[in-house]
Amino acid sequence: MHGLELPNPVLVASGTFGWGTEYQPLVDIQRLGAICSKGITVRPRDGNPTPRIAETPAGMLNAIGLQNVGLRAVVQEKAPIWARWHVPVIANISGESVAEYEQLAGTLDGVPGIAGLEVNISCPNVTDGGRLFADTPKSAATVTRACRAVSSLPLMVKLSPNVGNIVEIAQAVEEAGADCLSVANTLLGMVIDVKARKPYLANRTGGLSGPAVRPVIVRMVYQIASIVTIPVVGVGGVTCLEDALQYLLAGASAVQVGTANFVNPRTATEIIDGLEDYLTQQGIRDIAEIVGAARPPAARPAVSTTA
Ligand SMILES: Cc1cc2nc3c(=O)[nH]c(=O)nc-3n(C[C@H](O)[C@H](O)[C@H](O)COP(=O)(O)O)c2cc1C
Image 1 (cartoon, protein in one colour):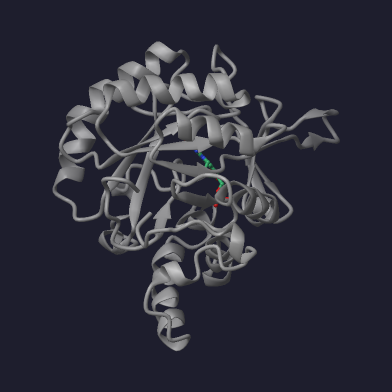
Image 2 (cartoon, protein in one colour):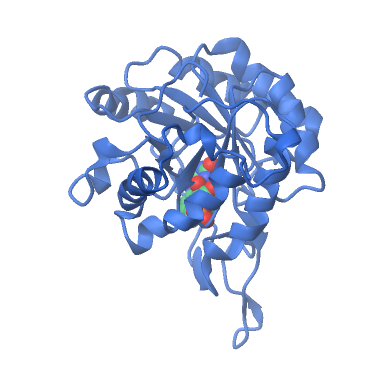
């Protein structure tokens, strides 16, 4: 990612790896490419009422509703811990208005321990005033520009798959000053409780994640990476080396592992090991050789080895 050299291209996705500290006893977190923090909002949030998680075929539906400790606690309590770590921590931010995004990005700028920002313009689970800024090229660009204006940190903007033309939105976000794109957040879904004859989640709808969404998001990464010139990070259903390779071959410079962390917290570090072996076995010296290799040659832009 522009201005941020990642040690490797395997990150962990926001909301699935807490603040990083929770996983410290289980995983060698310092080996990760980066940790995308839990979504941060200006004020602390309790999240949505339960039930807010449902298991689905090859995935899960969640409507956590951005439960988090809020901006001030992140700056005072979390960032000082991250500052002592080797692994870069990318702060994932969510606002209910452009002004809130500005406040989040501006406050986190220059805070030791925060290596970059992931701007979540796409959380589908916030009903109380939360807006989907990812819905139109104009609103997506407005949020990106506002964050860019107040932050010198590398800016990764996380797109929503719940749109008509995601390529158009990716282009608008690139033009507005994003350094990188994460593709994508969860797909809007619903599970019905047939006994109660109503939606199972208290929020009614939730975000679908896990292997079920992977083919949809791989397609989006393939489409977007041939149009934009900034790096794309593939997020959606990465569970193993082969899944990560699909994203790289589609044109992603890196991947994020999300739901798979709940099944096996070491998924990301296992993929890092697997990727090293794969590159050695295939005689590939620079990972850039495979980034976008599944696309027609003319469609492949120059890519760097870092995300
Ligand atoms: C329980 C849960 C909480 C999440 N919270 C956030 C969040 O706070 N901010 C965000 O940008 N994405 C959030 N996500 C979306 C993930 O970061 C990721 O984009 C999505 O789950 C797709 O990847 P996966 O299929 O590997 O899980 C959350 C996902 C889950 C499952």
